[in-house]
Amino acid sequence: MHPVELLGAVEASDPVADEAAYKLIWLEQCAELSPFAMSVVGGALADRFAWVFIAGYQGAIRHIFPEEKFTGWAAFAVSEDRSENDPLPGVTWQASKDGPVINGSKTWVAASANCDEIIISAGRGGGKQFFAVSSDHPNVEIETRPAGRMLPDLSQGSAHFSDTRLVSGSELDTRLVPGFGPCEVLYIYSAFLASTWQRFPGERADVELLLEMASKISSRDEVSREHSDMVEFDRGVQSLLRHLREDVCGDIDLWRRDYKLIAMYAQK
Image 1: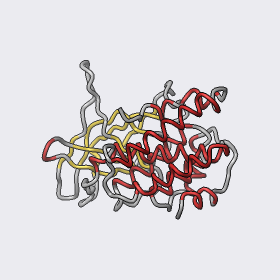
Image 2: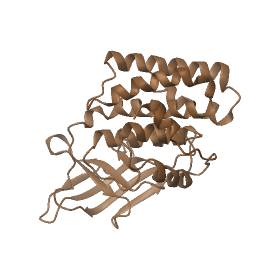
Image 3: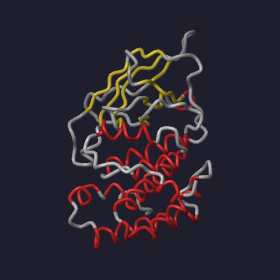
């Protein structure tokens, strides 16, 4: 479906200041969509950058793991504790006759209070595998930290696995995993553009052109920051962001507080 058709089909909602409430709206309108459509519709429903992030993040995860059947929100948790003083153990896995057994901790889980699955990397080198673990598994503890300065509306925390047994054959296809970073940029940009289209009608012509570019890029399995159309797309999104900062959104508190979510992805 063309991006403008997707946007026109969105059932507009009132501003949602709570992550759990946004998730309910997302489940109703986004859960069954393709990764690109998920990002666009989720972005159009987003009145703040925390929801823009979630909308794009969910699309990126589904692009990278197209065969996985997610029940709701997923988190892609690969970060581990690198501190010098008593760091948390990294995640390891061991094979058993009943399935892999997971132990260790991941230090960053997005939407930690409301995610349904956590995709984790486990092990090192040639033994490294990726698994999707249900957040309500009895041997999984998700710890949500107090809100920080970056996207305080987004719950963020850590995940701890203690003899967490998974079913046999639960290893994920990792073929597209190296492209997660570029996909995250593509889909978060797309969600940002959709949110801008919805809330600032004066910008719609520019947004629609950029979303057409994003739609074409998303049709490829492998997304690269170095590809010429992705470079052009990045420049267009960052140019729009600067325009919004200078001429449109400077006095909007939520926008001014969190716009750096988009700025930080700028191609260097």
